[in-house]
Length: 332
Ligand code: AQP
Image 1: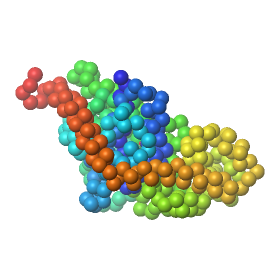
Image 2: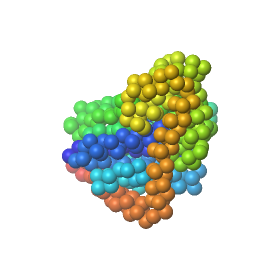
Image 3: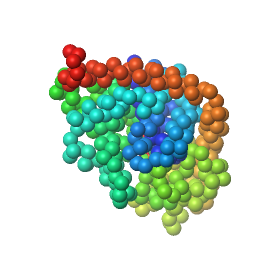
Image 4: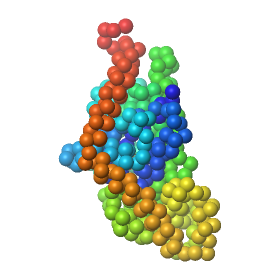
């Protein structure tokens, strides 16, 4: 049975980028692979690589878990758990740090981007983050890891670490394959299409949160930055704003960019944006409704308890064997 694993950090309220690049893919993959097992976790240990307010963090951890459920995942196929509740993530994270080179971590663009945003207070954990991410994946012998484009480099490093470990100690870790969506792998900021839409962005104008009100969702799409050409065409270099909106449109309607550009030939941006505003709102509002029902129910607690138990069993065995391979402790 194939195992598919992914996680999202509770570093802000989930955005349309997280939905298109990650969650929507999970739901589609479940339909395509009805026999596969899904491990989805809330990456709270990753969230504290940057400063978090404890009260907000606690709230957002539950929100991410509830959002997974609200997005229509099949609960029979999915184990949902919270990363910090499984101690083996941190333990294997350290063991893998000992098999990761400084030069490899220095090349990670996410570290470079995030440390550029902060002038002071850059933590050591922000730098070693990819080793923990490798642990998240390798702990569960995941076959596939669905992620957006921004995580591709970390996935490649995970594969390198796994292969290095296997070469040194004998075959032990499964080398995972990334799954990156063909359309929508990198949704850009609505106000600055040169940068990725991110949930931890200081200004909320550039992203659509999955908890935004309907009027606000529509307003953000209608006021998204475009250009003065007035042609609905896919040209990311010269029309990055329109290209981003076309990508969102195509992802949410499962249509091709060509079909959409044809539909809006000879029409201005207003009609295109109005239609897209409805499409985005119609996608998010039902998820939101279910989300609020789950947040107030006992279902969430029960699922997270069940997920913790299942994940713990797998993780414990893997780390114990890993330590033996390395020669740690007394067990042979
Ligand atoms: N803009 C995006 N377009 C497509 N996919 C995206 N993802 C994130 N942003 C976009 C995908 O969402 C998943 C969860 O990501 P994460 O929370 O682990 O970290 P991230 O990639 O750093 O996401 P954010 O929203 O940008 O968070 P912050 O602001 O905390 O850094 C991943 O699969 C990611 O590829």
